[in-house]
Image 1 (tube, rainbow, N blue to C red):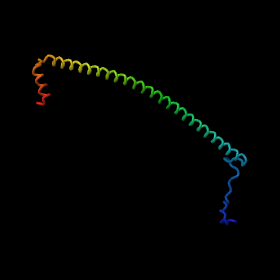
Image 2 (tube, rainbow, N blue to C red; image 1 turned 90 degrees about the vertical axis):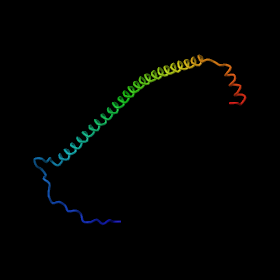
Image 3 (cartoon, one colour; image 1 turned 60 degrees about the vertical axis):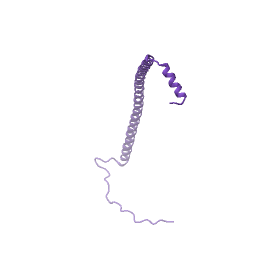
Image 4 (cartoon, one colour; image 1 turned 30 degrees about the vertical axis):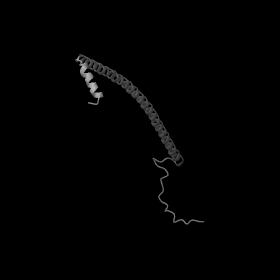
Length: 132
């Protein structure tokens, strides 16, 4: 099946200068353009290599910094945990000692009270007899 195309675009009648102070000869001009493109590709490849190297270096530095920071954190955490644990143990021992002393004082106070065995026995008898 044939396709129908519209009219072709007008062709420019202006001729490019074939030579001049800034023009290379036609065969050399193509070589110069190719050399320029090759040079630009080389520069781009070098730039990409620099960027990749910088990214790799940044990744290494970030990893080292993270390890260093984690080690510092762990060290500080362990030290602070030990301080808090020691403080907890001291406070717990003080509280237990204070409680023990208070309990002994209470016991001594109870032991120093006069005992009325007859009144106690009578109260127990009334309780068991249901005379609350």
